Length: 298
Image (cartoon, rainbow, N blue to C red; front, top):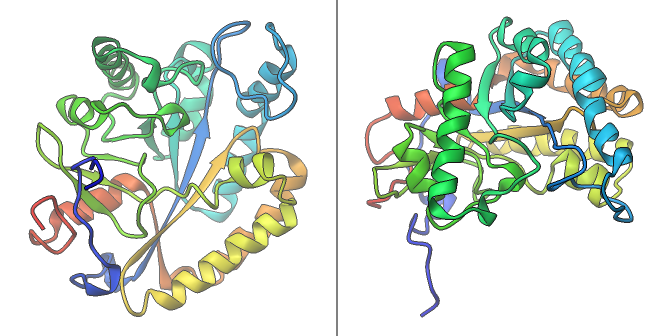
């Protein structure tokens, strides 16, 4: 028998209990916007091109464009069409550009922990260092926002064998590091269950636009197809569609021009869907009777 992670059991989506989102909605949509910061001249820093030796000013500046320009464009887009973000924050940004995070926080967007910096990965950390990383990121958000984050996405979606146990230990209610489903799923940890909220790996602007070099027009057509197909399927079962953005990618003007088509397509059917955040999805799942959502005991 193959080695197992032991975190959840297999569950076929058509054989699960049925439920609805608030107001009887069947498709929940969350917009998860990644904002990231990097050490200059050291540590990790995706280049997506021919690797350059440090200091890689080209890659650093390209990423910093997201904090200086892209995030603000995407903020204006959300204000224009009145939809919420989950802002996935490297907490080093509180030292670098706190006004950017504040602009999202003040409009009520959810602040989700995204580690300290994308110059590091949890998988490279020993146990105690990873625990410290999680605790420091959590404490920084608490100090600035007045409340601890309820959700986590690891830099590079990188986990160790202990990450889920440490996240639950630190008080996290959900994480988005396992792209295994189109519905929330409860995971086992040593400290009690933690919820996995869908977060798209396949249809993700970083993967599509940069790694695969998918043209912006095609990427946005794919998002529209994803929405239409999931909305139709949601008549059978509740679903979660995650729209994953990075400020330095979708914040580019030519990509934003295409992405506006996606937003307008979704908004034309706004009354049929729940525009929400991962934290609100988690709270709704927590309110459902035990056993409705696949759990570690199933």
